[in-house]
Length: 246
Ligand code: PGA
Image 1 (cartoon, helix red, strand yellow):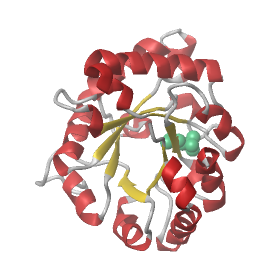
Image 2 (cartoon, protein in one colour):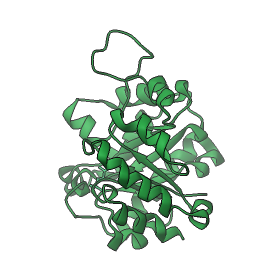
Image 3 (cartoon, helix red, strand yellow):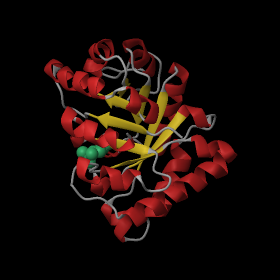
Image 4 (cartoon, helix red, strand yellow):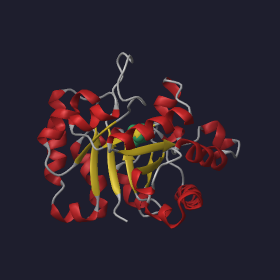
């Protein structure tokens, strides 16, 4: 399947940062377009401008509200993301689960909203350091996968991003064996749910993906791309990551 490398800018970037997205767009030449999908998820206020200024890469959002409209001050609806030119929405990032108390149920409702609006939901899952040390990583992550996918989702509606919480922004990464074990287990869970359709769902790895480790991580079986935080902010770093598929 065609891998996806998505950049998550988090709460970083002003209008001037669109320059970086334009550089990424220019570096994503024909040969790479055939090999890998590339996306940037900027802060919501930049989605529209970015979508207008890039030609080849996709643009996504970092979150949405479950409802289509209403009295939800400060929130944005999935329909607004699509209206602004986004075609995917990250839901359930660990920072949202931790900082905003999002549960698997909230995340499933947001993924449902993405589908309603016609956007792909990039559903994030991942264990904390304590959960891994206690030997609970598989149990925690697989239960997040099961409970965060909406009940009427189709395989083509979703992407899963496995991001160990302790690897995000820390420079630490799991061993390739640990990544393979987790991604293989997630694949089995998707196959239980979707049958052979589960093979079509991209499972991204995220957490301290950098130019120096991308080739090794992206070569792991059942790793179908990356969700990249810090290293997506600079075009020079980000393009080295998706260029591993070139
Ligand atoms: P990082 O973030 O690449 O900076 O570790 C990844 C993410 O949180 O999506």
